[in-house]
Image (cartoon, rainbow, N blue to C red):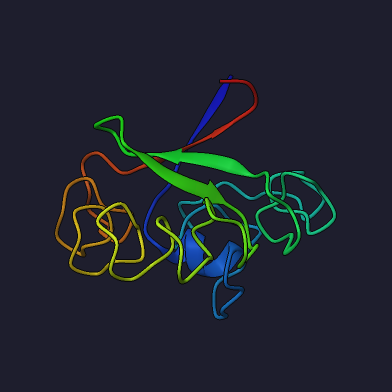
Amino acid sequence: MRALYLPPPSVMVATVKSAQPYDPAYLTSDRFLGAPVSPYDPRVSPWSPDGATNPYTTGGGRIYAQDGTYLGRLNANRYDPESVANPYGRYGSRYSGTSINNPYGVYGSAYSELSASNPFASRPPVVWYGEE
């Protein structure tokens, strides 16, 4: 099983919502700190069943907070109930307490130590790929 630390929300913005100026080939918002990833890597490929940029997959990495809370799946499927890209789902809504997209929640706040949005978070969420 591989763990991948999920830094600030630019990972979500870059790989899930495809908003530029960030390059989805990097796993952090700071391209000088991020590890370069090939666009053919199954974690980011739009053709991979686990790719974060694949708009039709229900797969993708599972996001967990450091306190053990499940925070959804890292994929671009707006209709997947577990996707962080689903604006009406439990894990993608701006109003859900378990969403990294909630700017006032524990996991989406710019100030929380458990948040994906805090670039200085001491315990940011992790993305798990592979078997449980």
